[in-house]
Image 1 (cartoon, rainbow, N blue to C red):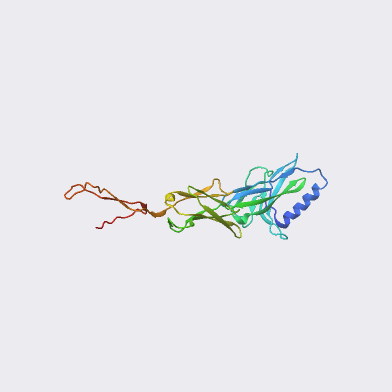
Image 2 (cartoon, rainbow, N blue to C red):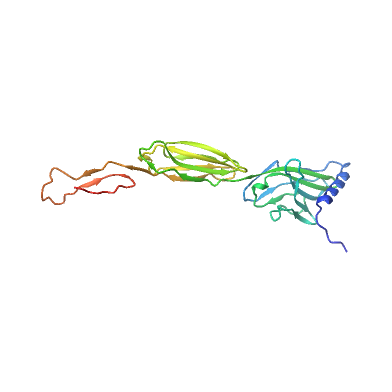
Length: 282
């Protein structure tokens, strides 16, 4: 009766097996090659595949794949997951529930899926493959997590005709890497941009200034934000409201008016924003 399979090799047992296989393969011919991209990009909250493929030679097979994440300089890489054809997958904290094998069948495809990527997942990862009989091989990649912005547009103070240069609106976007912000407008104006750096992101605030006039009332002002983590640019449109009042005029009186005349009427005309109210006095 065959004994039940044990857990995958990790820790000291994994290192011992690695040394033994390296000794076995030291005198043999060169094995296959590891294919790992230099970098992989993920978007915050989405799943990402970390590829690792081994091009094996004839009569060579991968017996275990171990994924490690490198920390700060001088620290020991942290184990992420171990893939073993007999014992399945073993995932360490804090990746438990978030890492699973990407492919099926032979371990020549040792890719893993990292679910719901967060900024803390950024860094360098190592894919270690133990092959028989050629020994150990590894590949390294860098994971970058993009944080797309959620832009906010804030209108400026109320606009009135006759004012000087006034803030019409400001638009702020924060993300990683830093987003870009620009304006599209039906009116003439100027803008000023400032940036602020944070621990894991950067924010951009762009302010649009104009000299209010009645011709600007009802015109649109659009903040356009671009970022590598966005499939399309984000656009927020603000409709300008400029307060103004035209001189009133009275129409209807003619030289033919006389006492007792019926149907005589006077009309008061005025324009403004908001619309003016009328009050007649004699």
